[in-house]
Amino acid sequence: MIHKTLSKKAIFTAAAASMFFAGCSELDDLLPPIHGPGDDTPVIASSSSHVVSSSSVVMPYAPFETWYGFDNYERIMTGFDAGDETSGYWYTFDDNGDGGTSRVVWPVEPGNEYDPNSLQPIVEHCDGICGTFVLNKGTLTYQPYMGLAFDLAGQRNYINNSPTPANASSMGGVCITYTSDYAPTLEMSLGEEVDAQIGYALPAAALPKSKTGVTKFIPWSNFKQPTWYKGDVKFTGEQAAKQLVSLRFRVQGAPGTSAFNITAFGDYNGCGQTTVTPPGPIDPPQPITGKFQTWSGSNGEARIITGHDTGTETSGYWFSYSDDMDGGRSTVIWPVEIGSVYSSDDLYPVIDYCNGLCGTAALDKGNLMYNPFVGVGFLVAGEKSEFDHFPAATDASDMGGICISYTSDVAPALELGLSDDVEATIGYALPTAFLPKSVSGTTKFLAWSDFKQPSWYKGDVKINGEQAAKQLVSIKFKMQAAMGNYNFNIQAIGPYIGGTCALTNPVVQ
Image (cartoon, rainbow, N blue to C red; front, side, top):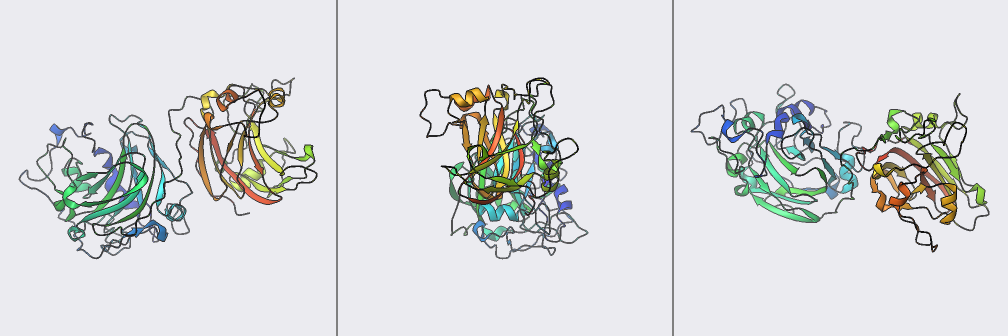
């Protein structure tokens, strides 16, 4: 399944259909193709070495301008545009059409005023195209995949919504600067009709994985059809370049996650101003084993379904807390009045207004001897019973940790709240994971092992994140800093294992 990024004219959607069967291409020679080698029966004569659809018009070569992510412009100026200004826009493709459940997790929310799927915010955030490919096999019979692509010529007109081939021979090949946790491949797609005729055995070049960044220069002659392909219709890289529809950056392998960042792309003589920034890790996905359901503020639900409720239906409701018990005067300023017919503290009006839990942390030191703080949190199991209103502890090991999507003007912390007795025993040095501030928004996946007691704690009773998870009472998002006002918005929270945290559109406060 292809997820096309639309142009400013918002006319890319139909072009996505032309590559719906991309899942049939298998580049790993150890993996069988979805079309078995004995089943490859191209529609054209067996004596042909390559073919151009009779309905296609091959666009001639024009200068391909090397695309650099640090220019913060999402479109690649390929020099081949067919007339509708739809060439050169990055879009995603995946294995969903064949039974896989792979996806991409972006560091910030895509979309702009022209197109809700625009990757312009990603480019500006990453100085490239960065994110994390989440590979999930689903019902696939081969390894899952996910990728990014762009069309060389795009659509010729509004009526003909199929991408147009381009004669890219004079490019000589391509160059690319990137990071990738998995070894990717570059593929040459020739359009749905021709791709189908060659059993989706696209000419491709294997690239190395690189977590620190690498630049590769690949001539067209290095693009080869995979060795499993036994069909009659052969394509060399040079032949494919004469009728090239799109170039595709693809990651395929065992289920897991692969962080990536593409920061430059050009013809064989391009990519001179190499620059690369490894993306921040977003590394959750494993099969869901727990019952904690990822909460997204955009769904308008006040309660988080933790899967650990004691039966009192009191778990998962957001609450706020502050430093007032220690002499501080900090508060949370909510954007709308809180409360409902059920509770004067109900934060549903805020969630409904913000598409998340948003507000302003107004930090005031008062008589404190340390920096002031406020926070929000929720009980994982709720109250012990309808007669005992003390918070219950629960074994939340099945969550594996926590995922969270948020914006914050100050660097927050996630704390694992325990029972009053345990917290007093460890001097309130709760296992904590410190998060970066992010005005534009970020998503983080934190395993229980990422939660540590603060370095100032010198007590004898130690407790790590895994131990805290076995007796977890609450999860708290804490903001502590110098006096001042700091905006925040928690847009999603869920489990590390199987969590689907992602940014939504935060409210402007």
